Length: 303
Image (cartoon, rainbow, N blue to C red; front, side):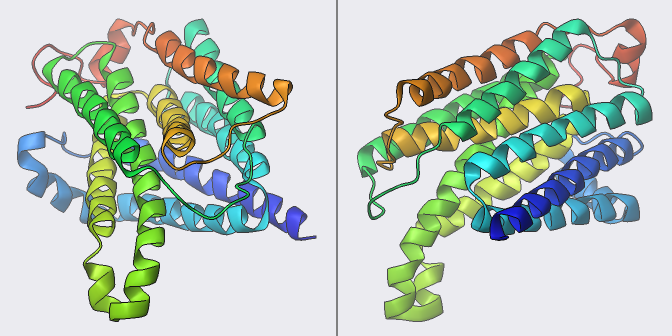
């Protein structure tokens, strides 16, 4: 019964999250362009928009329900449901936003969704106490943060059909890193709370890093949705935000690797499918009307 309830909550969560993505994209298209050098005025326009606040509230509600579902059902069940929700977004984007779905987009989205499903199926439950390799952890945190920053910077320096792909990858990496930092925060604050209570918790560097990365990811996600098509940005964020915690968990957090040959094949195939999906989505070539609607013009992305 618990499993069934977890599945129901997972379905509800993915509906809320992807409907929120659709609503956010629709609202952002009517708001002033978010420029990196004018984040204060951009934040003011967002928080003064009732429609955006409702959309973001749906995102937070969906995320909360998703976290409950993870506690009731295995990740190998919940995550594929979460990934499949992108299909709902695609329908809403095509019907409600008029976004044009090309054959290469279908292939890219399908590749990423299949990759997330394979990734989830190949998950292994940890059998030992939490432990990690500090040097390796920080190496990959810095590495993926650098890749994210480079991807976002390049996106801001150019304004063409690859811009949404770069933004989606950069944001997906940030969201994935945020998940790792949240996990480290929970491990860090336990002993600190036991000894120093709230003062100890506030002294956790992982806590503040998680907050900073999450806030930056939220801002960049709004920019990505405003700059690019939802059917390109959201699948990329979904794929990479699922991929990064698995890679870091395997290499730095001592999480076990599948032992069954079939599960090993699923895990390796998931990496190829998610990255391959990103490559396919980067091959999207917008038409003239789409270029105008997305404001694709050289030198204008970053303001």
